[in-house]
Image 1 (cartoon, rainbow, N blue to C red):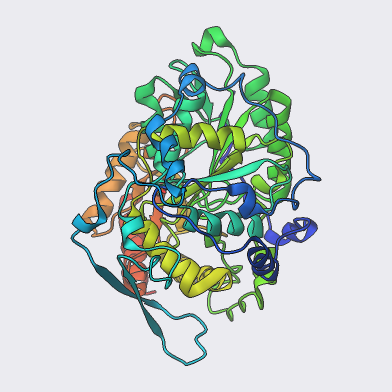
Image 2 (image 1 turned 180 degrees about the vertical axis):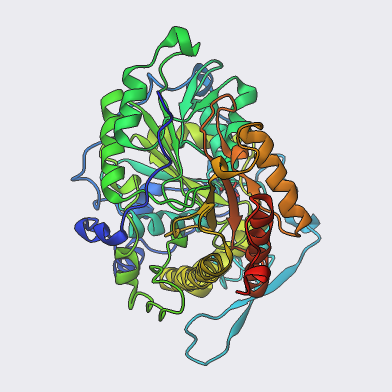
Length: 533
Ligand code: PLP
């Protein structure tokens, strides 16, 4: 069977056909917090996610399916850390602990930290705010989190203080349609994927992914003996791959895991429409697949591209409009609890925070955090504390949405610059592209069958020559073949991946111009200078 094409980009307008029911509002969060009282979470405190979700808000929803039949023996038998369990006794008033091997905060050589952040929608007009944290702010009653707690050992699920914000944010954006959903923090999605593979896959198993995918995930799975197949994310094609799976020929059992990057996919930049997500979810139900939804680019959904020199499309007018403009996630469609959604701060705050979170059923989150207790322990306390200060104490939920909206408009401007430059500088008879609706990548398809050496050289050879020709012209683009999950599959197509995430705008234009010249030279086309353009 020919490999299916990369996932399609469909108009974002279909998001209007689906409103996430009963979505939590920012006002409701404030009420819920007022009702639940002050959060008191000291050293290594266990978090009560049920309380963060509101005790009664989800009871009308069905329970998640159990996944005992999918979990590996390793995941099922891991009992957890007995020493972390003992931490729950620390909150007993008057207790003198001679228990855990926790160093005294007296010996943490950091008394205070401060850092500056953007001050969003400030009433005073100040553009920046300086946030400070001391060692004993909790004891002094000036904050719910301090250095003595943040720099101490913590629970695998992360600090209750930050986790509460993440649970609320998840409900605000996705409102999962089953009752026993939960969240637990990760040290980023790369690690979350690694841990998920150990929970769900054994050596020799296959995972289904997009035709081209994020190489780190393939490289993570491969040494565990787990391979990825380019099942494609067209629902029909996915169904066919699974229906016709030949264990003998494939040398492995029918896949039970689906790994997908539905929004602003890396590397293709494509975004699955709501309709596509529903169809794929139905295929997952039919074949009882568990879905790993990897969404670092979810909030990099941009304004529509209207063409060169066209006026900018104004941003969503309110938080409500902003949330409605986002394609609903798999998590928000997940009536069975068959999705582990991986969120990450890497692309919306900073990759070096190494903080993210998963949302899945309580059963899966529990298995995950028990594993974290015994491996990563928890995300860095310094990172958690910084995120808490920014998100909880400075911005709040509304401010975080404002920040995400700001990022959306920044990426829209960058994406428009690269697309305008492509229109102006690239030879359209040998290279084509689609305007990405989300993320940070532009996927450039090169018509290599028009290359002068097409009959005498392989795709890989010509791709390599073009890669080096680009370098000689002073522009670096990633080879498409680096993103093929199964290196033995010949897709027959040639791509280069460009990112508009970081280079200054004028340099993005210049890099595209150089790429155009490099292609013209390689394909024996008239250069722009010679054409007088
Ligand atoms: N998933 C995808 C699809 C990515 O493209 C990336 C980074 O490029 C990551 C995950 C990495 O996420 P994290 O920094 O949270 O590990």
